[in-house]
Amino acid sequence: MAIYPVLTLLLVLPLLIFSFSSATHTNAFTSPPSSIGINYGQVADNLPPPADVLPLLQSLGVSRVKLYDADPAVLRAFASTDVELIVGLPDRCLPRLAAHSAALAWVKSNLQPYLPATKIVAVTVGNEVLSGDDSILIRSLLPAMQSLHSALVALGLERQVAVTTAHSLAVLAVSYPPSAAAFRHELLPYVVPLLAFLAKTCSPFLINAYPYFAYKADPKRVDLEYALFEPSAGVVDPGSGLRYENMLHAQVDAVRAAIAAAGGGKGVEVVVSETGWPSAGDEDEAGATAENARRYNGNLMRMMAAGKGTPSSTGTPLEVYVFALFNENLKPGPSSERHYGLFKPDGTPAYDLALAVNSSSAASSGSEGAESPSPATEASSTGYYTISSTTPYTVSELLTRKLTAFRRSAGTSSRLRKNLLSSLELALHLWYTIVVSGFPKKSLLMYLTKYSSSDTNIIALRGFASMRSCNDMCLALWITALRGFL
Image (tube, rainbow, N blue to C red; front, side, top):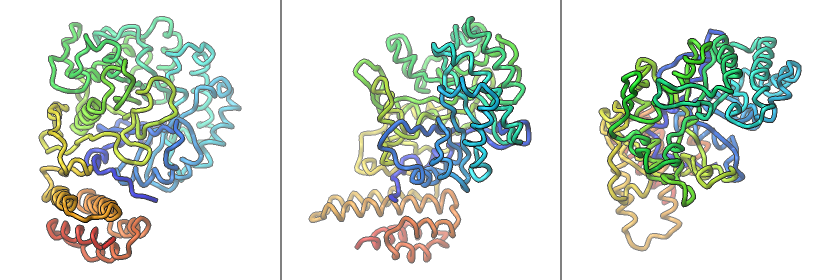
């Protein structure tokens, strides 16, 4: 099993933790501090098996993941781990699961066998059902949710697993200004009782919010900088007087205002279950570029790391789930649908997020990331970045300088070059796990035993695992990397 080159995201993606945590209330939802989750879709024929995805998530520090089904292979792969899962129930299942007996059978087959070894904390019933045009699904949504919750209660699992559903912004008839937002009138007979259910079970209202769609629909009128969390003129809500510096916050507050106007949803939290920006698209898909994806997701992650709430709820950090972990090559629709992933199927970054930030920029709303990166250098082409100005030693700079010198040396075989790149990646990754995340030494040695092809690496690591000097550690890592193949 190969070690995925995920170094471009090592600093920020350890923050990718979504909001579905265990609780002692009526279900698994609480109100944790600011967090980012990640969606793991599998509409592709070239993705690594779930067992191979787990080390990738672990190397990133990701402990919570949102799925779109209840794939047994994924549930088994994540058993006996610290990863908490939201599983999805496909739209097609809703009419049948409106019956209590069918819902009970589904829970017994798809959830109960994996609990508690696999940490399943929620089920999303359908996806964007209310904004669709299938009247049968719309009428079946709440009954299916109620039946699933009743099944969980019958099995004593309601405190472990919550029930909710995700919506698109198309459920709103009015979204601007945010304070005047309202649900579509024809959906109110379904929305109001659904809100009552969420309030009763202490479950959140999930919204899939994409500023990209607004920009794509009208690029001449929508401010790209406003959509990308970059410095802009912003927007002032004439009704509330609140100032919005980015579109995502305006979209979320619009949903909150619509819930308040509909009634029945007092205390229901709004969670962004999907948001992202495509790194590629068709010619008529304005803004679908790797640069815009880098700016959107990078600024979003920095903003979330700062724990900022929206203007209407500044004291409540927003909970967000990035879409998505991988590019998915079988998704239908325009080309952009297949390019939302942070990673390609082989585990390499889909684009350069350039997430190295200092402590001051991490506390900003994302404006610190407004400047475009400098032209690509030899260092950036390797996928390695300065860890942080707050770390005691920027090991990546040392390694990339050595890599640059190596590349310029004459007579180097392509095979040797490939091995060096692999060893450098391993070395920097190990430095991160030891110095930054405090990875337990025992676990580190087990990790190496499983993934390293060289016993020399393991022997060398035993020598420097107890070192406190970053300078000495960097040297030891470099020697270790070279010993792996020379």
